[in-house]
Length: 305
Image (cartoon, rainbow, N blue to C red; front, side):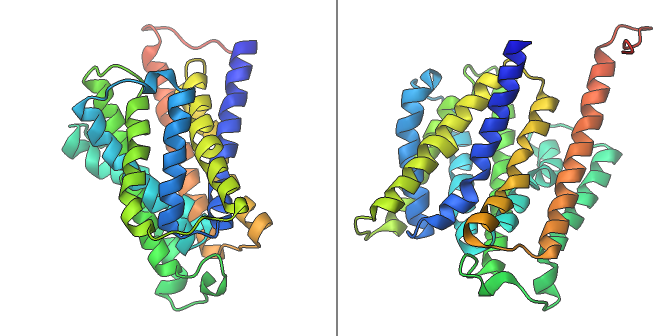
């Protein structure tokens, strides 16, 4: 029980660290390309020091997954620089929408009627986030932390798509019996992200100390240590419970940006985020319940407490 409780705490801590990404990215005065590149470069060093399984030669499959993850890392930083943290994290959280399209094509996994209904609900949530600009209503463009929300939201959509490809890739690696926990894909993904950002980040003057500290925090704590918490905790905590605990990230991400920067997401963005998170939670709960029922011996019933 103590081990399981410690694992749950690690997941909550990981989600809390993940959730600070939006506020921390906005606190750094460098460009999005500079933040993305330096954050990932620092994360590579931290990964190699903290995650032993990352210190090995990756396979070709892992390098493909690393490319998708690199795109996700860079686009998430750019989206946070262009629009509100709420928009960026909620749009990335819509990755299951793309998985419903991509899984049958790339993994041969069929979609059910329930999946299609879930797809419609997620599409509604995404539409809510774009409502203010589609209708010409007031948008957060006047906020200094969201200079171009329209472009940022489209970049956020791309980030969610690339995150879906990353998850598909990790599942593909597992189905092929690839060894390791995906740590090589993660560390090389950060390396690719740093290289991809470099041409757009130059020229760059020596950043002030405050920005350096923010970058170190992002690379070491918000990525590397948080990832280490997750990999350790998943050895003890069931996937569904872990997914629920990790929902701390999209819930608290906009909160930190509001506290630190006074950034206020639109009501439509909050409504869309609630729809996306609620639908994901309900679907995950239903699937976990059915998986548990399928594992029970024939004729048996779960014990009532």
